[in-house]
Length: 164
Image (cartoon, rainbow, N blue to C red; front, side):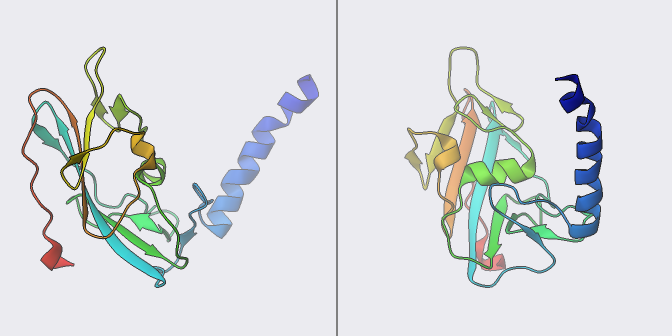
């Protein structure tokens, strides 16, 4: 067993070196390419609220500056618009976006949000309460996704779709 574990640091170093030469490794089957894909091009809007206060989703999620690539799911601005620009047509999920962001997502946690003890986050999709796993929410064009840790709960603002 010791021989197997002793090779782990070398294996990890090789992965880092490979990423620096070949770009970032895929996350949930989503590649980090040098250009935006053109087969599927949609936008979803995500808003996060902690006890009534909006939590910013940062610009540049899915756009690692040190790699010179962008994942098919990414953000350009801190406006909550998730850009899906893919070379393949498939269903992308909110869970995949959070994985690319490097943040956790489940019924009690969504990135920096955490539900109160014994409670769950309030998740709505186009104004309707979502009862399933938030990771499974499909990202569809002009869809409004709101995740809140409350109370109090905020009144979400619609996206500025005319800017896209």
